[in-house]
Image (tube, rainbow, N blue to C red; front, side):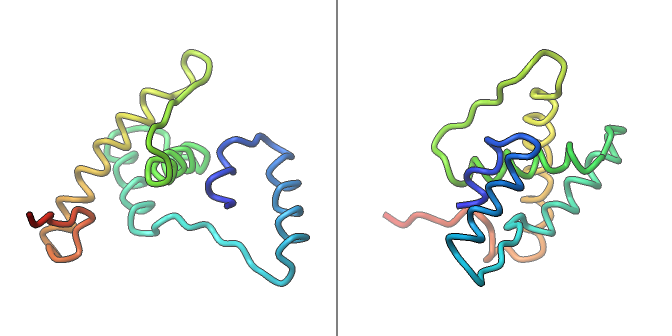
Length: 117
């Protein structure tokens, strides 16, 4: 629930949302579901591409990926020059690189599964 809604909030709203979840689900802990291997791949790609690999930009790429897994369609909206196109293009290139690297290591654990008809 947190991952689905987190990208919709700004600033102080995240802390307020976390507090509401803690009140509703007492005793539960909430962790970031982002894949650590993919995050490392994102950071490496950004450095290799001479892009700023600050935490905020990396988080935007990871949240965009998380949203594509959850939703059937995703729109990146915002003012001109904030990095929407760069997030999309970076994510596309990162996923291609990530898939190729992981396919060569463990082809049976690919994110794409064969469909038998």
